[in-house]
Image (cartoon, rainbow, N blue to C red; front, side, top):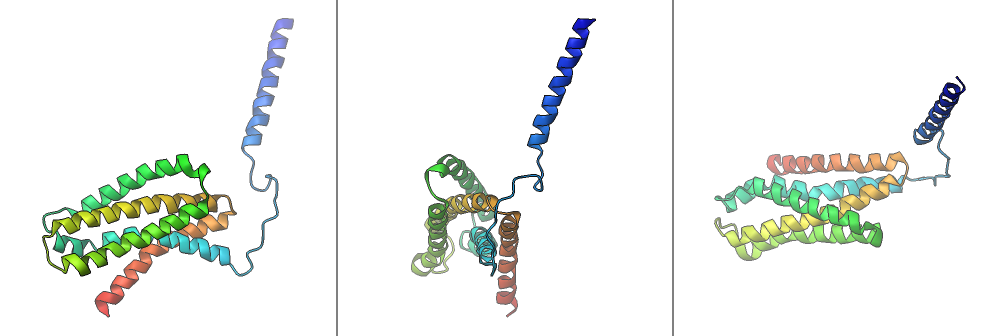
Length: 200
């Protein structure tokens, strides 16, 4: 009989310990230690994260929206499928690399390097058309350069998106919301620009 009481007490202690550990893991923001959050008086930080959210999706939207242009230039290629596979595969591979490398570099460096790569990748297509393609369909060497530009944009996206999301995650929730809202606005901005160009 004494043995069963000891077993019951031991089980009760284990349950109490498990409950305390569970409560410690399930802290709510109100029960978490409060740190002093700097005031964003003029919403500059919010605007920066919104703009960064807009910026890292804009190149993909630009490439995929111009698929009719690329289909005209390269009629034998499945441009939309190739762009999607190249962008997603290269982006995933480099994102895995960034996860392993992130602790060795600053988010500032990764974001700025990625934004520079975005500018270069988006500049390649108009320069290529101006200098080499000149609107003539069937020049598939230009197609391969364009696919390489899409791959470069994917590398840039892996750098920028992971760094922006990571740094926004260290801040109050409002800045993650700004980043996601900027991402949503990116698609709308391009759509409005297309409507303006088509109807204007």
